[in-house]
Length: 300
Image 1 (spheres, rainbow, N blue to C red):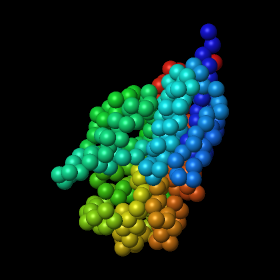
Image 2 (image 1 turned 90 degrees about the vertical axis):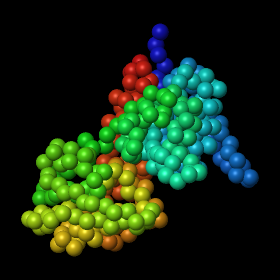
Image 3 (image 1 turned 90 degrees about the horizontal axis):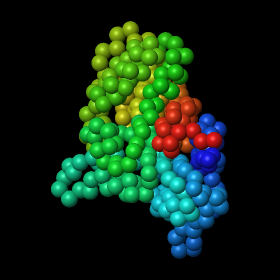
């Protein structure tokens, strides 16, 4: 018996949807949604899903306004007869609060993981911010696959010449060093002293002859952008004139992308995990195999 082609729904318009539909291959699902005058959501699925493996694509930046619509879609797919419902979240939220730092705080990473695990059969994501957790299995009760964005950055950097890479802090050293090894460029790691949510100080080591080269700041997530802004200042103090920045996830709150460019960046480059005008690196090919493995392999 021929297995029906899986169906991919995109909670919001996302450039990865069409690319993934071609690479898997799968069908693109359609649904109608709108808000009632009181702000509640209306949802109607218009693609038949009976007996089909379904996936929902959504970047979970700014997640609070997305989560209820995501749950409504996932639950309705099951009610309409979907065989399975998987979550493709190129950016995975609620990884920051991984412990109770002060009595009374919510450990939101565990709470959110529990909610997602109740609604989905599996999860694929890109470079989640694993700090105190060794893997997603510590908090997610469903099968998960983590895709590394480093190969995409390495390929892009391999075509660049006369540059050196800069990791803003010790947390970035492991993967900046691996990118540098593949791309063949030297690198340095800064020391970050965090004074608050929006205040950090970056100290760089002696750059020597590297100060004459173009610096490329590498970070996994740029949110408030204060770390990168401080890194730019630190590089300027070391005499570096040409500075680029590349990241996996560009959240860019409060229009900080414009501040970064105004602060002296030649170019700002991000992967297309979160839609932004800086998207130059496509991670869709890296998502294909993990997704196929979790939905049970290729479909006819």
